[in-house]
Structure formats: C-alpha cells, structure tokens
Image (cartoon, rainbow, N blue to C red; front, side, top):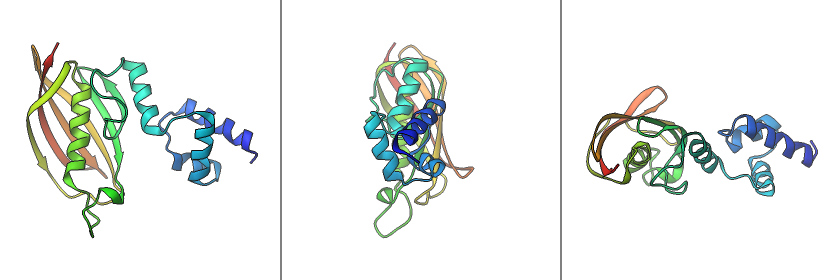
Length: 181
C-alpha cells in the first residue's frame, strides 16, 4: 500500500474510532506498529492515550486537575461528577523483577487518577482510601477501571473504583475526595 493511501486510511480509521491502538491499526493495514507510529508522527496525530483524553475533554469539558501525562490509563468515557471509564494494558515494565505479576501500585494509580478526574471539584485531594486487591494481574492483561461517584456533600465526594481484568474483579477501592466546589 502506498504511503499516502495508508496515511489516509490511518486518519480515516482514527476519525471513526479515536481509541484504536497502534497495534490495531497495524493489524488492519497489514504493516508494522513502527510504521503506524511513524505515520502518526508525520501526520501530527498523538498517541492513543492523549487522543482518548482529548476526546473525553471535548465531549465532557476539560478535566479540572490532571493533564494527559498525569492520567494513568486511557480515558474511554468521562462524565464529571458522575462516572468514568479507563483502560490500561499492562506491560513487562510494570511487573516485579523476575516475575510476570504486575505491581499493585499500578492498579492503585489507575483507580486513583480516574477518581481524581471524575470528581467535579477544584484542587481535589484524597485523604482516605480503602482498597482491596482481589487477585494478581499478569503482564499483558488489560485492566478496565470504572469509577462512580457514590456520595457527595459540599466539598466532599466518595468515589468507588472497580478494576477488572478478563472479566474478573482484581481491585476495588473507595476514595474520599475533598476539594472546592
């Protein structure tokens, strides 16, 4: 496939589904992931994580606290003050040394950052978090985090975060978030 044609296909595919990964694009176009990355760079298209946050900000308004670089996981859906959804594909770099198990702080980071983004508060902070790890996560598993604001009062919201991998619940956390309305 000619370079210009392929790049047109990349642009069209990402207009249709901005959450497509480089791997999915490469598979669809029968080229390498590196070729897709070079095409994206030439076209000025950011990586999927930044695109996902851009889509969420466009659809639901800018997040009040975190930039795309600070959110751990790819935001798939966001309704400030109500709920959020993110995805994180685990990698070897997240594992304990000489192990195929992902370190727990990566699960916490995904849940915490989505909890901070979903609340509709200025300068949010988490003074209290209760969490439970249900099972270990293997390198390569995809984590889906769903957050829901379950309680709110002036300057305080409680967010429930549930992470799933392969249909199994692997982490559950309840975050008390304080901030200014």
